[in-house]
Image 1 (cartoon, rainbow, N blue to C red):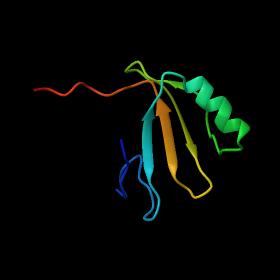
Image 2 (cartoon, one colour):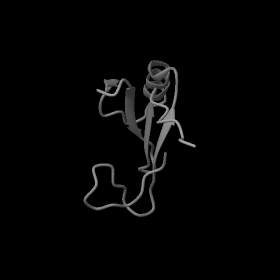
Image 3 (spheres, rainbow, N blue to C red):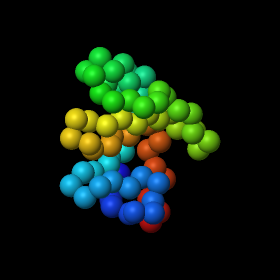
Length: 77
C-alpha cells in the first residue's frame, strides 16, 4: 500500500516523500535490522485490534515505511 498527500489525514506525507506499507511475516526481524541500521523508529512493534503486528519508521529522506503482518482483505470476484 502507498500513501498520498492528504493534509487532514492521519498518514499524510509532505509532497516529495512517500509512505509505504510492506507485509512481512517477521516484523521483529525488520525492527532489529532497522534499529541496527540507525533508522528513526519512534515506537516499537504495536499490536493492532485487527490482528496485525506493525511498526513504522522513517528513512533519511523522510519517507515513512510501515511493516506489518496484515495482508489486506482478499479481493472479491
